[in-house]
Length: 463
Image (cartoon, rainbow, N blue to C red; front, side, top):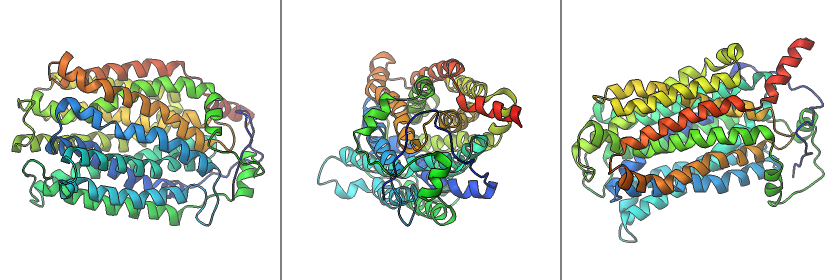
């Protein structure tokens, strides 16, 4: 059955949505724990895996282009169709269930590219698996954002996205730290010759695949979605009109003012994050451990990769804890001010990496990054959801992903050559630039129009 919507940013709900319990909000987002577990394994290990498969450091950002390119295509399409889907599983749930099954398969394949080494160069096979994995992750991830906005009233959306960010942080901590834990606690080897992925990383990917599926299944079985008639009562939509994929371009042209303004904030934020994810391992190896940029298979380089997982676990752990504070902070100083403060702290953390005298110093740097990361995962969506027309939540969440993927694509194209030619193979400067961009994001968010916050204030006055 197709669900279509009326347009117009000012469309009022015919009936106020009921408030949900904390447990209901938790169940609604629990699948994101598994999704972020998979993303964390990718973020902290993909560069090391690709380097072990033969990639040069200046080419890393090109291989990482798979993620934003796939997201640019997949998320708007998934958003478009999930707005118009209804079957026995619901509206959003069919998509993130299918994505979970496919993602778990991709996670198992990524560290085993060597079994297909006779077909093509290992680095090409590894990059192909990375692209497949990202496509599956995006299929699973996009509907979760829309699900929270679908089911929660304006007054609960900060809490909803905060709980989602908390679960993202928990999953990311587990995924980031798991290879190092398997090595240090369970003595699973972290050594491997060039062209082969270490056993601790392989096992971590297998465990991640299992957790991915199980957590999404939890949400599928524990969460209710509003059927078409009830959804229409809350959102004021009609199911009498079918629109094809061409409507994505029309919706893009009608993008709300708030989304355009948030787009600049997202551009600065995600340009910074992409640089951090791609170049942290090699920054630790060269800037902290003093290794040559060409050293990519020694035990010391494996230790740099493991330490990347540890400090990424730190920033994700901090984000999980800080996410629970976001509703309180936002209530006191405002949504935009909360996001600006968090981004500023994150920018300082990234710049501080340059001054690190040892690897332990990076823990403090990542504490600051974790504060920004929590806010990036929650506050833009809280602000955005209050400006989206009725019945367009999925498609506009997908279109909003353009402002996440485009800066990553740009960084992916220019980041590697800049590190090689401008920074003279010193990737630490890529992290400094990331910090500067994060500070720019902090400034730009102050100028964003937040209609949802205005509505909440008006409702309080009337009450």
